[in-house]
Length: 220
Image 1 (cartoon, one colour):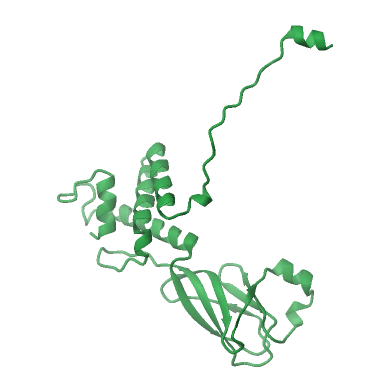
Image 2 (cartoon, one colour):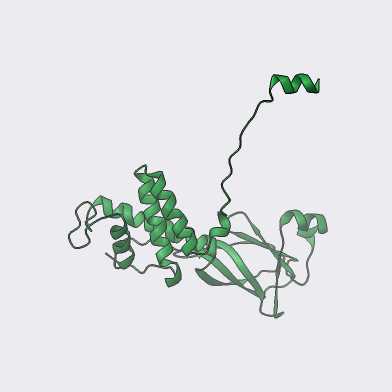
């Protein structure tokens, strides 16, 4: 087992030296790895910390393209850079673009904006009138799940402990222990610096009080 798996087992009370329920060949260990993979993928998606550079060669009079990766899953575009024009493209959404230029699908010329459409499609405004232009895309990706302890775990060292806490949270949630699941979920988000996604609020108590009949009569 790798260091992440060992850390998870320690936190849930398993004996690392002589594991029983979560031995390396049991179905229980598969559950642990699945939980770690879930934590890694959630962190990479939320933080954009796992990136790949994608060089997209544009075609003449073509505006939309489908992106794909060989091993990992495409998440979203962090940056689009026009290498020929030496400038970064600005992100825009379809609604704003359609209001700005209702005929945007028929408008060619220098590229100034990019838009992400659906899960794995990207479009440009305006579309190129000649082929040969290359756009360098820095994309946040979701790493493929690892299957054995010898596989490379694709997550930055700064987020490994957070991935462990999220895996432990998922384990306790599968056991119906909502209290511990919530505790480790909060630890994971704090460690990853993601508490802005789940801000704490001061506890409040609301009370309903009926006015007495005498006060109501006096007001009447």
